[in-house]
Length: 286
Length: 166
Ligand SMILES: Cc1cc2nc3c(=O)[nH]c(=O)nc-3n(C[C@H](O)[C@H](O)[C@H](O)COP(=O)(O)OP(=O)(O)OC[C@H]3O[C@@H](n4cnc5c(N)ncnc54)[C@H](O)[C@@H]3O)c2cc1C
Ligand code: FES
Ligand code: FES
Image 1 (cartoon, rainbow over the protein chains, first blue to last red):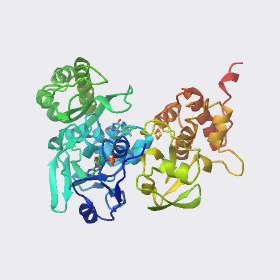
Image 2 (tube, helix red, strand yellow):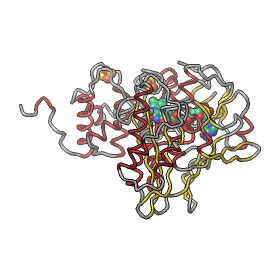
Image 3 (tube, protein in one colour):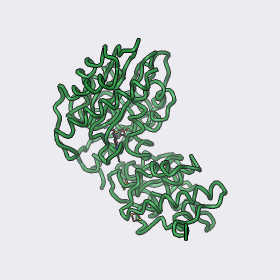
Image 4 (cartoon, protein in one colour):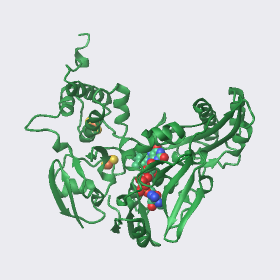
């Protein structure tokens, strides 16, 4: 299975990359999603701009109260970074549950976000963490909130002349914690999410002061479950409170039937996994 | 396009199209046909090679992406006619049936043991999650990796299943 012919460019800088991007081009980072699609001829860009050789994009950085993850940070690095595990367990877990060893060695966190697959793990994590995405082009950098970044199935807010050069999210403060859990397509936690949920909570004085919960896999895009967060805030975070909040898991989400489950089944899963992720986030909250 | 890389310790180069996949460069230009092509879609792991110390699926990379890298294929494991401990483990513990998945299984297992020479059964199974065996001989594959781990640690490998309790 070969892709159609294309021009390949491997720029040495972002500026060079912006110069190579056009209407019929595709950015390639890990290639773990792009190449299979090109081999199936679902995508046949005229130019592939491989950003894999641009220096300086592969860092996980601690900037005091935030952490930033560059465009070339691979799933394997995100999954094993002590900084991310301690401050953003939802993202570390999502990365560790992505694909398999070989996929995690090549695929990147940002590539996965830019790809915006409806069943990808990372998008839910960055929404729950309240991350900011950096969309850079020759004309400057746009900062996009993660909750506005996912527009539709396989469609992000990125323009074709932009590169997602990195993301940034706040470090976990006192009482804050996050978690991710999913049912994978191959059973257990393996492969893309049939239903996946990331939760972030902030506890104070025995109650939940703030929360963000995002659901992936069940609809056309990863979505903030605003109803769940509303029900959690002010509650005591007891199992009963979490269970009752989880009932709102699919409020405002159009659940779609697919090969992996009916609307009824996936709606049920969303509730079960909201409860699991919120409980895990509460347990992780220091 | 011209590409060059190190494969099994030797410098190689070749003229490829941009769309030439790494696995095809390895098989067709270098004539190293031990690396197999199974699903071609990134799922089965038959095409696994070790690139700069990490297992990757060579059907899901362009040859030009591997420019300048160092690659080990199944042909690069045995030295002076002596099998690598993982190859020996697959032989001793019947870790293969038809053998189609075997090169990929072995490359993933070699990479695992280089990071952790005493993996638990769960760690072994996790590390070959990206390798599918249609003969479903996973039980003996795990035993083969346990055998190899013992060899790498300089210990006596556990006895084969078929001798336990006999
Ligand atoms: C066998 C297998 C199993 C998988 N299992 C899972 C799973 O369980 N969960 C999961 O979430 N995902 C899974 N994936 C998908 C994988 O995690 C990601 O989709 C993949 O790693 C994308 O990252 P990449 O760097 O490889 O992107 P690429 O394949 O290089 O690019 C993907 C898309 O994003 C665009 N793009 C990439 N980087 C940028 C950038 N920096 N700026 C702008 N656009 C960009 C490309 O143009 C392309 O359209 C699996 C993939 C495979 C092959
Ligand atoms: S042939 Fe590469 S993963 Fe199947
Ligand atoms: S031994 Fe036949 S596919 Fe694994």
